[in-house]
Length: 418
Image 1 (cartoon, one colour):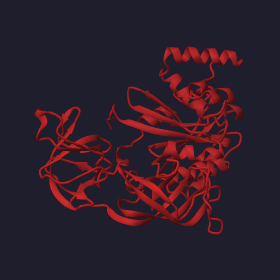
Image 2 (image 1 turned 90 degrees about the horizontal axis):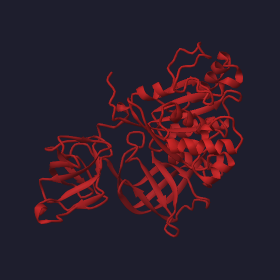
Image 3 (image 1 turned 180 degrees about the vertical axis):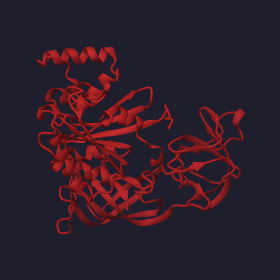
Image 4 (image 1 turned 30 degrees about the vertical axis):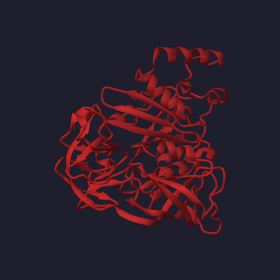
């Protein structure tokens, strides 16, 4: 199979505190020669000042001053690197329980999740918590990295026991693809290069696994959804006849000549042209940013959605969703919030909290249903006008939303439509 060298893979890291997430990413960047010389010099200086013998790889990702001083990750750190085979964006997320919301943020757009397990401790509650969130967010691929194998003498039995532990509870989760890797991020075993200390492991190292991960089929190419972000009106005499509708394609494939319907109005037309910064396109697909023109002059504005005539989302004013509460104030049912769904923005309220989930045991709590920071629960949402939605399991863009507090303008929750 020939790989698209321009293909972008987004992956997130997850694991408990000190499982080695930042060190692993530092090792990936360092061994794949993706570190700038000034970065390397700065980190080398900091490492010496802190008394380390070599380069502290974790410092390549711990960008905040507080993180460097405490040696922990407290925010989502995004890093970009590229290899001859693929481009990558990494979301390094915190391992502390109180930063669960940050993991949800970092994982929401990921193709893959790297869940780190300390070989000395095995599967712990945080491992289950992060696996559950990865499953909830419908991340298609999970790679379980059993780290710090050097501290257990590179034992195959320790590794196999952890694989068995993880498989024991992950069978309850909705995850399509789970892979396992024994690694030592500190020493570099099975990260970029194959480990000589674990010749019993016959699989590929982590970087090769990421480079060859098949993600093309992860995109929804069936349900064509184009949320309109802005209307491009004539700006000069050369473009007096141009009226385009710009945005990012959420899913599906569009071509000039396709019959489309504009929601919520229901007006129909035909795509005339599809334009990008590279000129006119014969087809466009997710996640391309494009401007479409239509044969007919239809009243279209931001928040409308262009879809295929024979494949339309469901317009609803009330729906159930899994909600991750991100704010330090408890969720207030019957209180009005602003809901942002694709490019659509309107008023909404949490009509009811159906249950809260104990994400350590996956049990449903129907007694105490208060959603506090980092809690996840099933809720019923009611909006002032219909939204054009799909289920999150079918479409991660049109199936997700955020709630904003009208008084503080803070994002208080992220939701996945059931």
